[in-house]
Image (cartoon, rainbow, N blue to C red; front, side):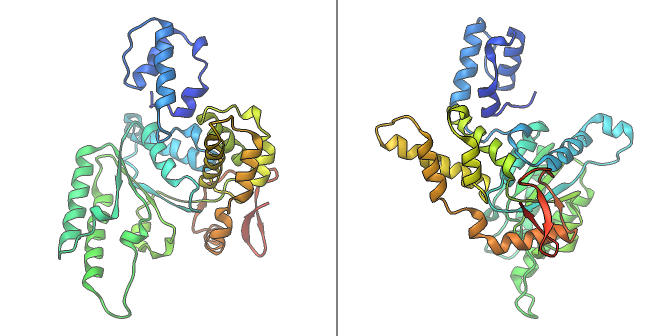
Length: 344
């Protein structure tokens, strides 16, 4: 059993569960299994209140059904049954690009949890050194460590800042040579290693990555802004995590106001509303707090308007697969304005 997320724990009807089922939940949380039913429930409820939001499951990812389905199928390739069926190696990785704040990091953490793998997030300062040969040494150390830790999900965020193909005119600088050498080590590892290392790269500037690196990924997906129904799920989920009952608020009104919001925009607006209520003698959070916070927010769709348009064009050109659900409702992705893909 994968580690339950905070949201899934809060949503459990613990009173209706058997002692065996409660112990299964406690076992997944690595908590003691001793006690009567009431004591077991108290342990789970305490963990749910204390747990951070950083433990995610598939159910926590809203509006990305095509991507989740791909991950569910790909995850099965790490099973012994896949080898018996005839698969000769493990998948090497996936590339995610998309709108900032739409859940790329959350997806990576959820995959590691759902696949019962380790999780390693690599930061740029771990792979870039000031001395000649540092980059290559750091990359070789990384892949050796990953192979020893396998099975493991390796998450590299904004990979183009680390491995982007840049040149100073016709000059081939030492920095270029160091980056290319480090990339060659990574490429060879992704091609030859079969220890069970799965790379999740994100890149906002997709075109800067080399064709050779792009070719190593089993899937390339674009994550767009959440649709109307996805925003509804996100708002309700975030309120539940913050121990608020979504039925106490007009969620449909918040969905309408949040048009063009990313998941991060929604989270920030809700936290801003709660901060306002908390500052006023910790009074209850009311709907007007949320409406005001949502109305004052400047959505990601406005801040990164041109960048989002360029990324959507990649989908219409077939360079990326769409990660978002195709919905036959208001909020669906449609082709308009000469092939541009937009939410309606």
